[in-house]
Image (cartoon, rainbow, N blue to C red; front, side, top):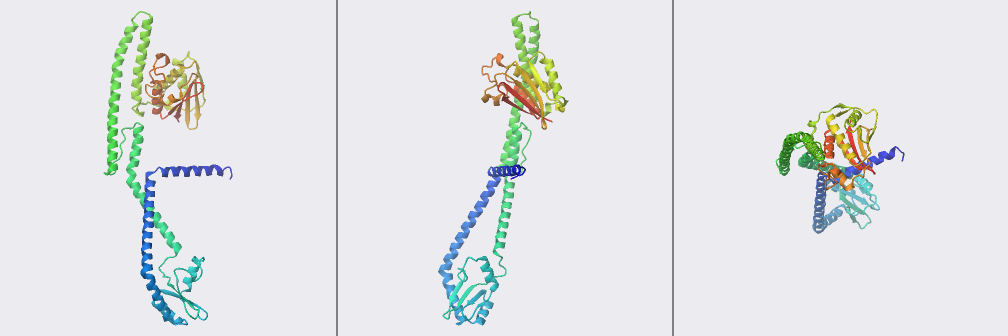
Length: 436
């Protein structure tokens, strides 16, 4: 096999395996298969029953009567066989008569005989079970059979016709099953949209049967979930807004206190409470979806430089920024928030942080890596959850309250990007994949 044909062959095999997996897990194809299996079982049972019934009637009644009738026809033909009488019988009756012997050799339907011998070459001439043979005393043999009606199709044509009817029935069954189960596709799409946070989506109600009732119940569940989340969001926003005013007054009052360690500690705690309130407000705004963004064409490298210059000028952060990156539609304020949170999280655990950008196909990668101890693998999947921290004791010396990476994930999702976290050995690496 050539080098070019090998990938094509692998591609076809992968598509075939994917199609098999899809059919194996598809309820529609399983129901169609059940229909075909039921049709096959019904056909086999019916044919077997009819065959046994006909065989019993043939052995008990048909065969003796037919044998006696053929004896009478043989007597009419006479010994030696009279071809004229045989011709008269074939004109009156739907029979074919063949005479073989020392003096007379005659066949009323030679074409039918040759066709039969062509289709059944493995059976000896004159010994087929469908033929009825009578032997005369003078050595002649008379073979009786049903005449070959012109309306009977050839066996291969009958087989193709049967296959065509079976395929047509299969297509009709699939179309019916697809129509019956179409509400399941709508419910599946609705579940995916709900899982993505789009609780405004509604599943169309196409029918009024059990599946229609299920779709209505799922829509009702989405309404109730949306109401619960709206109530929770409104509560958090109200609490956060109400806390900002007393925190501002407390900070102003603390500023008037004489310089001391207690004053510095109080100002530090008030600043952390202020940041927590800001993070809570921002997380609730971002959770409302893409409408919270104000994107504009931005240079990612320049945005990184500005963020580092404004808040991390004296911190151990190095950059490796790719040149020639295209401009991206970014919400500059939210992207600065993401960068600050990523850098704060990295600097909290390491004295050497690297910020890197690169072009990867139709996406731009932003990578922030520290060289700290990393995170146990079992905690990686939960790092972007709200208020999740690896340190169960939640000591301030080991980190914040667990909103930083959660906010980063919300900002990434709002921009249509994906964020991944992995242990870089040493350290932790956070990658953001931004679409062009």
